[in-house]
Amino acid sequence: MFIFTIFIVSTLIGIFLIQQFLMPVLTRTVMGDAPTAMLWLLNRAYLRLVHHVQAFGVNIIPKTVHPGKLIVVCKHQSPIDPLLVQSQCRFKIRWLMAKEFMVPSLDFIWKHSQVIPVARDGHDSAALRIALRCLRNNEVIGIFPEGGIHSPRNAIHPFVDGIGAMVAISKAKVLLVSVDGTPQNDEMMQAAFESSHSKVTFIDLIEFPENATKNEITDALRARLTEATGWSLVN
Image 1 (cartoon, rainbow, N blue to C red):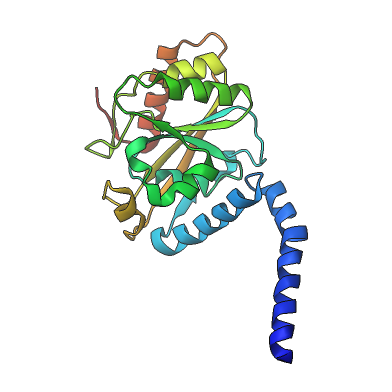
Image 2 (image 1 turned 45 degrees about the vertical axis):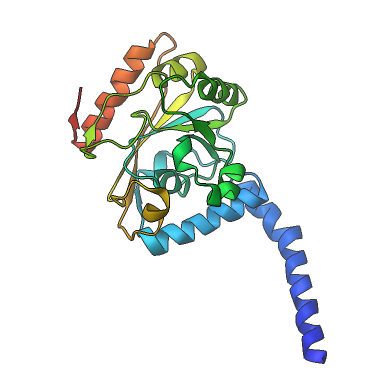
């Protein structure tokens, strides 16, 4: 009984210390809130164990929890791409994500990550309005400009309407990212547990001129991705 009592007391003290000291420090340095900070740590451990992730160009990533309005633009290769990019960023990225990838079993993650669901029918203006509102509030938005995973994967496909306009309207900086070596399965749950040697490369932190048009921004981003990856440009 005495040993059991010591165990209970020690556990309660440990929980108290974590809540009062560790979590406040963690939330000041990562993500900005305790539940998401814990998810961030778990994601880092998961990616290291299952996907052996390697990151390059991390020196250009803003180091603060609140970097101001920023759009993360990532070449889409796998359902786990948001996890790969977020694992290297201390700030929370609110991803625009296709509704079909948001499996109900992961609702806890979607909720705390504040994912913005998108219907991939080309008519979902609501998601764009939400993203622009977030940018006005100095939040970070993540987007896959090709609108999905396309074959061949190692090519830069046409961008969907909206990305150039989002940058032009918001005047946000763009953090340009590519991924490679990811699972080849397009289903979220299967890709999550398919071992890989994934790579995430942060290419550029770009601030476009005030007068840049949406078409100029789109063309510039596609050209920079092509230059950085060496992949062909598909029209």
